[in-house]
Length: 403
Image (cartoon, rainbow, N blue to C red):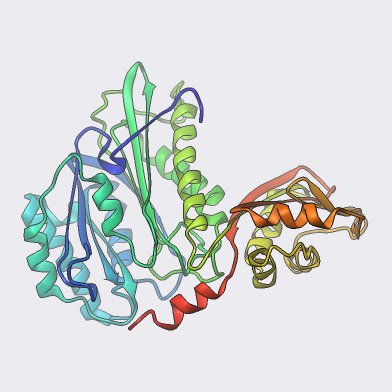
C-alpha cells in the first residue's frame, strides 16, 4: 500500500457523514438472514455510477441510470435474495416504490434515493416485507461492515475496504464494498459495488475516473464468463472533508485517483478469490501486446477459459490451454514470439514448449494464488486480469440456486 494511505475500518461508513443500517425482512428463505440495507449521507452527494450493458437489465438499474442524470443522490437502498429482473412493469414500479419507502423514512425526496437488488431473477419483490423492513432499519456510523454483509448472496464472505489520506491538508476517507461470487464477466462493473467518500469531487471528473478505473479493475474480472443483469457500481461524495473540489486541474487529483483504484483493485481480487466454488485466485499479466486493447483481449481470454480454469483447479500446468485461449482471443499474435510463465516457471518460449521442472510448475499452481505471465513481444500494450479456478463446487452451487 502507498505510504499516502492508511487502511481503516467501517468501509462505507468510514467517511464523515455516512450512516448505514440493515434488517432481515424475509426476502431470503432463512428469515433471520439480513437481506435489506441502506447507506445514507447526512447531506446531498455528487453521485456517479456505471452499470451492466446487458439488454435484460434489472428494474433497479433502470431507476439508477435515470436518477443519476441529475448527478446527485443521498442514499441507496439494497435488497438481496431477489434480483427484481424480468419482472415487467410491476417490477419497475416496485423499484420506484423501494426508493419512496426509503425516502419517507429518511425525510428525503424520492429522487435522491437509488436502489439495487440482487438474487433470483424473475420473481416479484415482496413489497409488504420490504415496507416493514425499511421501518425496522436503524442507521448508525458503525454499521458499514453490517451493510457489506447484508448485500451478499452466494458470497462466502464480505468484501470491503476503507482508506484515509490527505487532500489539501484535510483528512479524506474513501470506503467501498462489493458483493459478487458468480455470474461475473462484467462489461461495466461487478455484481454490486458501493463507494463512499467525504471528499469534494467535481462531477464530470469523477464520472470519467470511475469509468476508467472500472475498465482496469472490475471489467478485468471473470468468474464464469456470465454477465449479470444487475451490475451496478455507485460512488457517493458528500464533500464534508472540506477540500477544494477535485477536478483534472487539482494538484492532488492523482492521489485520489490512486486511492480509488487501490480500493477497486482490492475489491476485484476479493471477488475473484471468493468465486463460487473457487479455491484459487488467478492473476494474469499480459505485456508486449500491440496495444492495450489487445492486451485486454488476451488477459481476459485466459481468465475466462473453462479448460484452463479446470486445469488450475487440478494444479495441472497444461499450458496448452493458455495457448488455445490466446489464439481464440482475437489479439494479434505471432506464433514464434510469445512466452508463457506459470509463476516464475517458463513453460513456453518463442511459441514453443521448453524443458521445465514439472514439479516446480505444479507446486506453483498448488497454492491459493496463482500468477500467469504472457509476453507477446509485439508492442507495449499491457493488462492485468483476475479470475479463479473452476471446481465442482461451482456446479453444486448453481444446481440448487432457486431452492
